[in-house]
Length: 241
Image (cartoon, rainbow, N blue to C red; front, side, top):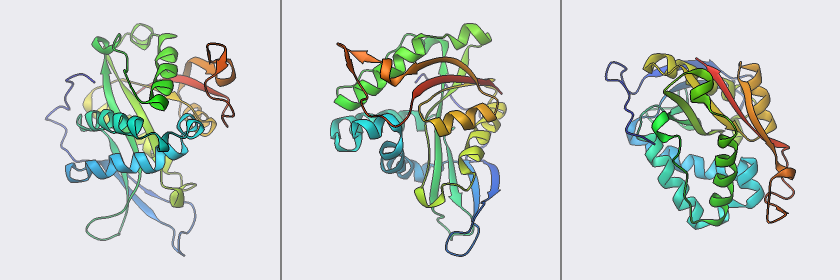
């Protein structure tokens, strides 16, 4: 990530959305507050990504990244750097006391044209395989040229706690990203969606496809890198905001 900074004119932390769930949990339909992650909960959010995103995201799950401590350490370091830009979004359970439960997040940061040729370098085996695929996918399209922008919001992961999946939180977290972009003056968001569920959601919310890779066709030395993966492809998608 670059030294992009959130404008001082946009207060932090800011509440972006409030949402009501779709079904009861423990006998009650939950309500959520979707906001910037407060500084005192940034480390908790990074740990949430380790415990939820890494275990459920198709590429990480396929490679069993949770059991690769070197990769987890490197991913944590990258996520801490992204969170430092102060635009990552967290979903908290409403009316849950003075320290409400963190139940979802969208880890996002701003990428500028100056970052275009910077490649992710990882020593961890699983993180390296994943990032090489994502870097290759990024190389297939140039959002800066296509949309005529100097920067865009990128996402490093969207995750919802298992207990609160099916409540529409993924959609609200994605929409909150658009709210953030409009507030800080970034007019485009670009994401590599790796799961069919997120790809369907992104399409419904107005993202367009820039490039895609079928996992069965992505090989190194003639061997599939993600054998047995439960999703079909990774799709690079973008939306003006």
